[in-house]
Amino acid sequence: MGADTDPDAGDLSERDRAILDFEAAWSRHAGAKEEAIRAELGLTPARYYQLLGRLLDSAEAVVYDPMLVKRLRRIRDAREHARLARAAAGR
Image (cartoon, rainbow, N blue to C red; front, side):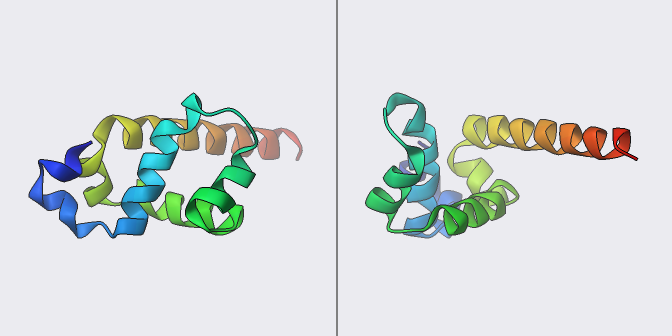
């Protein structure tokens, strides 16, 4: 990732980098993601997703791993769009 080569990525905390690295590697792991979050990061899944959401909006995260952050933003935006469409259809 970019942290070793880009000085701007140094603005991320070690925990922030660990969250991004975990998310990047997650597709290569088997098992329950929630259990892996607890075991590897020592966070509850709710807190993990709060922190990940904040990271997706940070310029430092984009510098650290631009492809991952952009992919996760697209997924988040698509889910939000689908949620809004369902809510509008239900009225």
